[in-house]
Length: 369
Image (cartoon, rainbow, N blue to C red):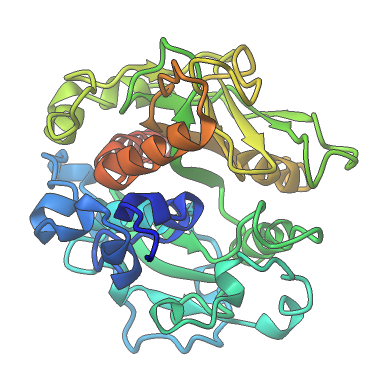
């Protein structure tokens, strides 16, 4: 007799986090029983927020649309670049900053992709995924779309490369370097979802980090930067005040277990911890993250590392707690991982709304109106 498993037990949580697209949920996630994949589009994507009229993000489509082989030189001199990492994050960024132009309509960036192909050796890298559902990410470096925030010209990007999945050459550092060299922005923001560290960080909270730090214990533990930390730029005056409850509560109200208004972790001590594997915090402190920072991710410290080459570029790392510390009374880390994944799929796009708002606030405060 065949062994029957409940659908969510077959769920690849890392695939879910990286690749689940709330705009167009893929069939593999439906087959795995991901509840969010069966909801309507309005129930999967964040609601629009009441942006101030003068600094409302406005999409700037290119006519004609660029070829995927084009470089980014047409954006040289843009004020800011915003990079996000997962499909859910990008869907939320598009819903709020390029309304009418969802990620499925963003431009593809495959300029000089041949130089990256030998560097991306990871078997789980979306860059190497030949399945039909992942065609848009196969041998793709990024998706992108320009917008304006007040007078500031902003290039929004979803990276096609990922520190922890691409292999030992970490080509994402080359990509960040290439973007900054080509665009020469004044401001660079890395943003997205993260795991809350410690019981004080609630689902939906936002960390505007004073620093990012590596906590590499697996594939990169012997690198000279395995425990390095990088301070971010000072938060511009007026940015925190611009992150108003009127903006953040719209989508916070859609998250079960979140605060009505997300808490901002925005001091010089508040830290985003970049691990070299998929880690998260649970009540047993299984991955030894407690005390290191407020949220864990898989990329921001490498952005900090790359930006050391560009001391004149201001930069920020902004993360939302897309899953809180997971209660794990039975000490079953696999079960806790599944729970974290289910929370992410349900609420990741809505928690991301708050870090999109924080990103907008930093940009409009940096460049005025």
